[in-house]
Image (tube, rainbow, N blue to C red; front, side, top):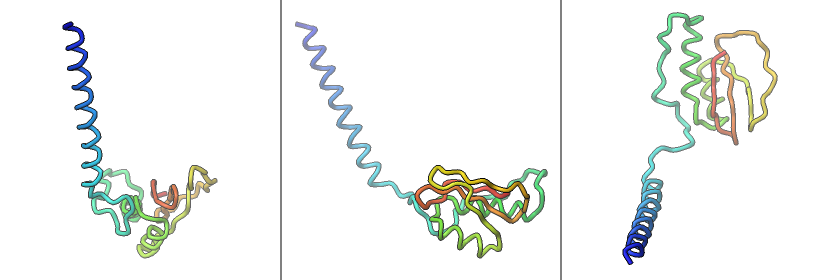
Length: 123
């Protein structure tokens, strides 16, 4: 008889934990304040302190590349062009494009998924 009681208590505990987990997911997702799509530059980007930077313009291009992460393609392109930099699409929706290996310290490569910038690098 004792085995049945242990099983019932265990099942009740699993049920309680499952309900708490589901409620936590629902409450947590409704309270999330981080937007997935941004129209403004990311505020948490900073200059790379590494002394091996190519030029000061390259340092600034890397900051701009960081700032466009999470933006839509159009917003990112507008921001990059307003900052006086050039850009190109390195990949879009899983398709990588052939890129030239010429170096310019004012160009930003964009990786896009469904119209959002998911990767950006200064090269």
